[in-house]
Length: 482
Ligand code: UDX
Ligand code: UDX
Ligand code: ADP
Image (cartoon, rainbow, N blue to C red; front, side, top):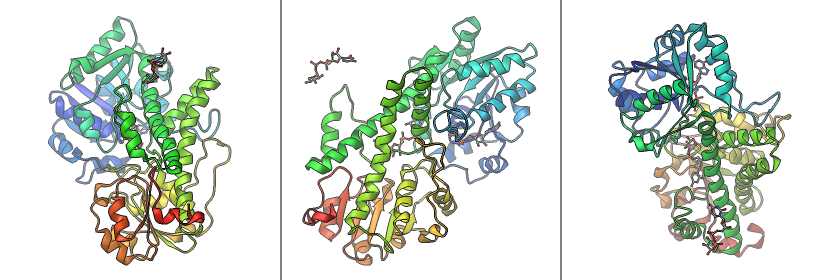
């Protein structure tokens, strides 16, 4: 019987996953531990360190009862039957595999610590996405340092999406558990299965071998990202031909073999997982002598880069080939709605490009803090295709061109153009008449998420560019503008 669970890493994955587990398994004590004291303090406060709809409620219901957040990593690992490891695994920026391979430094140090402090047998669960066969490496570290204790390694990748984490955790499409195919391995799989069976129907709990579970997570993210790059590549063609990407995506998605979800054309995908996991997949393909398979997946990232560049170029070319000194409002900075997360957000690339062209940006996002935006825009961008040289495109003082404001009306006042970069619901119900009146003319809207009502905006007087849609007729009459 599992009495105590601990999770190392109180991030976007560890925090929400364990909170829901605690809620659904009242008889199990769940501790989430992290080396970062500010993060743990935030989890113990009224202002949680991440924004997720519904999460506050879940945490309030269990915190202090059977859910605990602590920096005493060793104590909780020592006491637990199951230890989840949900630490960060960023892409390596230097050394062997730089630009593609996952950096397992945090994982390894967590594994060594588990081996050091454990005095009883434990199930160690990979929760963070890791390269295929990481479990084998972890197993070696644990067993070679184990002092006779038995460790079972399981892979249990998390499929939640940010912004819908609580909903996804309550009602997952599936839970995937990979383990060793021997008696001890199967017993460990069964123990974890019983935990999830508290709320997930058993037919949705898929049990596989370790390597299948590890690879499935990379594969699922690669397939999802590939759909977005496919629809985004189509969006470029739509703009060139007069087809409408929404109509095309709908027509394509009604084929039950394809399905309607995840076909929204956009300024590009972002988030901590898609690019990182695909790069990792590419690296694994290359290491296994499969360059053709690697190149197939590379193309998914290249199309994503193309989409971001294409969008920024459109902004500049439409505004008479110069944005120098012009105020441009940026609505939305997070990589998607309902999250404050900005990791790999396409907004960084678009803003950088516009700043390089000397635009004055006024940025508004309902959840992202100014400090975060400034940090993101001042950091050197890591070029995955040329990892040896960190792209340092920032010149001194460039950030002075950027202001971060606290509402959309302030951002758009006196602006020449608006770029919608995140699909926040509140952007749909803005008073665009009021916005139009406060803007410089001609007033442009570049909708990178297809959330505004282009017809209505054109009636007001805006020149509207939407991804994958027929271009504004006004624009069509100006050959140099398109
Ligand atoms: C993703 C996977 O969905 C999830 O299963 C995995 O566990 C982690 O990675 P996440 O990155 O949180 O989740 O968000 P997701 O909803 O997948 O969106 C990723 C990016 O794709 C966002 O930038 C989003 O705006 C973009 N996107 C998504 C599109 O551009 N079009 C779409 O149709 C869907
Ligand atoms: C296809 C489209 O399915 C159909 O909608 C369109 O009208 C015409 O083209 P078809 O070529 O007749 O139809 O057969 P389909 O079942 O799509 O298979 C095409 C090829 O893909 C076959 O060689 C099939 O063996 C292969 N295939 C299909 C796979 O290798 N794996 C699969 O999972 C599915
Ligand atoms: P994810 O999106 O995968 O959840 P995050 O970066 O949000 O990733 O969270 C990972 C967390 O893991 C961070 O809060 C980090 O401080 C924590 N962490 C990394 N290494 C260790 C470690 N050895 N022990 C405890 N916590 C760790």
